[in-house]
Image (cartoon, rainbow, N blue to C red):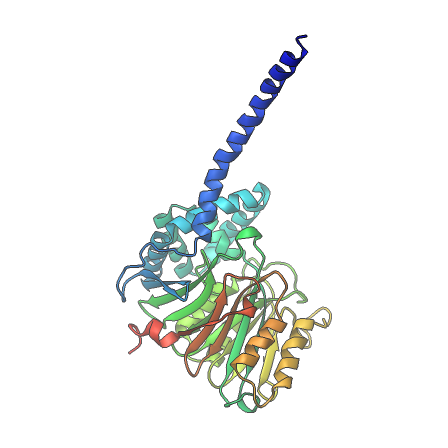
Length: 392
């Protein structure tokens, strides 16, 4: 006769810990939700009302564009202040997604490389840390560790429709569920040196993809088949080197010369282009070689192809796709064909950004924060308009 009562009582007793655990999960989830919302919210609207010529966040067709001015330290402070909420959210999410041992590994890499990194990078990251409140070494790790698998194509001269150079770059990277929300265009107006526009990711002091006010555009690719496989502790991350080079070099050839004279953490490919030519530098840790265009066509992905630079030859379908598309439209190659080529060479489920350059016209066409970005739609942005306050 008492069994139904006992069953009900038992259900209540069992229900209490379930509700308690669920409550704890929801409370922790609120913080996670807040962090995700800070990063995923497409309208990063703080500081968006600032006038031109001052540090600010603005939007070009829904893409966040941050303008930074002055010294490296000043620009870092501005970055951290304007994107404080987003950096805090990113910090919290990475803590939850990355195992503690992996976080310790990355932070140790940052600490071990600190005394070798450019002073401008350290000043930028310190400024970003102070104004955002995010741990300095966590931000430094973001800048010392990233590895992005990508592809590039340049077509010019007899190969293109009007003889003008076109360059495209895919940025392929996987970072859990927030990989579609980290893209941001960073416009740097340095106190000294050339202004730059980078298609970047949240928290980066350097640039994987960009163009400077002289019309020099650039992009890098991690290499999988280099002779040297271990990280060189005396080398520098390529995105930091490319940012410095873009602020100091006048042409693609000068930028390549700058990069080949430096040590690199890991084997890397870099394409630099201006209105006249494109060059790929295959950058090992002890040697390098250059590849230049064949009849106005040049492409690269994640492998070395020059003699003496690789362990074994790789037949890369993405490189083949780029070259076949360039051959298909040879002599009539235009921006639409470039988009087609980059889409054919994308990495499935990883294509976060696709940027197309017209260095002579000082135009970039950007698709970001969607997968695959190469599918578009692309938004055209005038580099001159972004930099008009700083170019005489």
